[in-house]
Length: 241
Image 1: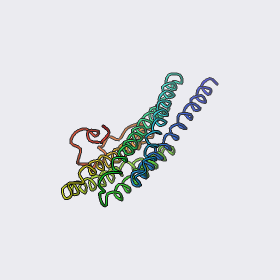
Image 2: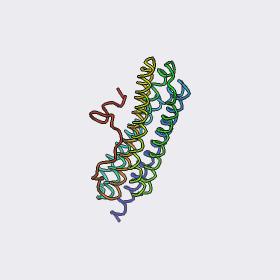
Image 3: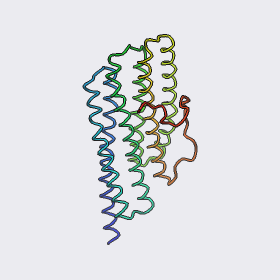
Image 4: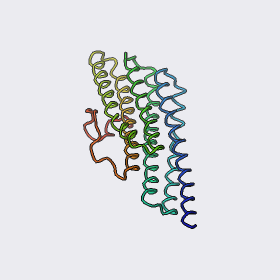
């Protein structure tokens, strides 16, 4: 009876943490979509709302970490349950970083609203951003369903995001060489593209956490990477400074 009581209490606590995780995911999705919309429409009010709402995302991540730490300290979860708690904490951390990147994109909207227009970049950014949003939805679906196949498929799609980023990077370099007056705008657009690419990396990490949750092991092969522009660490040129 005591074991059953402990199990029920663990389930309730975990459901609460997972509910906050899904709420956090909804806020991230909204932030990503609104940041892209604000950028495309030069909507400074919407961009400011994205920046302001990042605080709610940070607060949810902190609550999830606190709740998960309490679960670990009071419920003594078994190996499978322990993996679930650790996965929730890691996914929350990845989502929080995506929120930061959305906020960074919103920060650049005011600068680009008054900068020289760069042709053909907005559609490419929009396609890239949509691809990441779709990836994230699938990664979270894989988590809720404990679906290994979906998680592995999401992980493989990171290569597509990198390829989109590389193509956009080359396009921006061409613009800067041919139109020197566009250099400032192109630099900001590059940082935005890098932010979106990094969202893809964190989404891939979520998929890898699902693989860990289901199998008990993280993937031991290198994830397929197509981003050849980073010369050092993944965060060395992500535009978050």
